[in-house]
Image 1 (tube, rainbow, N blue to C red):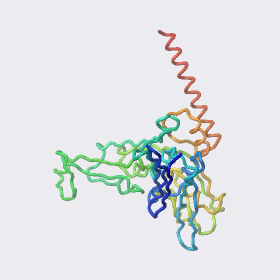
Image 2 (cartoon, rainbow, N blue to C red):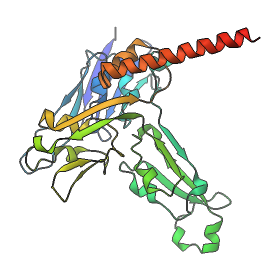
Image 3 (cartoon, one colour):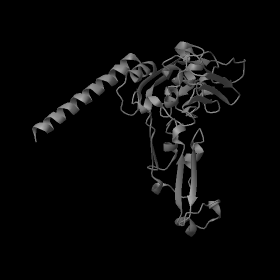
Image 4 (cartoon, rainbow, N blue to C red):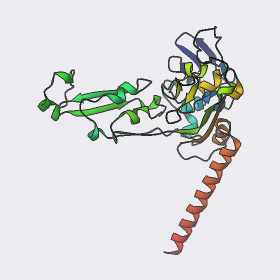
Length: 310
């Protein structure tokens, strides 16, 4: 049992702590990064995380839900840290970013598959940096001897020829919406979503003039207001299925969201199976188990045939 427990809630962060004899467990929620999606609340095995809708005045844009975490229920397992698409939650042990469920191989990590080929990037192009809805991309130009170029417009065309391009992406915070990929020249960026799903809006169920889902969506372009019918529509090319919109929607039947797959590192774990069932559905969880079973059987046959061939 901890010697001391602490919970501090400020405008910027929510912090929970366990102080033990030799270790200090700490969970920090960065409120500036949190978008009020439902991923952490659904995945938490202790049901320690609660979403709180914020009141909305007439004629004012909706605000995303706030998150509260019950210190008495939280055991600092780090599952919320692992699954947060936006990197808003961090769990540390005595100051180190240690996730025991990953170290013990009882829980997977999300695969944020982002490939960058700067050889195809025009030296004066900053499209991906400007397009990123979360400001996670930074482009810098370097001279042949590795010096940073402060103002590329001041260079001659000859000087630009020898420049090198450097693209830095905060991958731990990137939800892999793919907006940067579609705004870049072909082949510069390749992004694979780590959450797949389906989302649909039923305009006939939406309250007249309601844009709550659009107001809170953190991915600019995933939802948009049509000029033709003045209704909110979905662009699934960029949606990451985090559920921020679903949380604030005032009518259950108006917005339907289903997650069908989570791209993650290999793991065989009951804890992950339960989390996946809550994030997706029993059907999707069963599909993954069947796929794992098929792959395991195939590997077993391959090894057996390889042994016989020796």
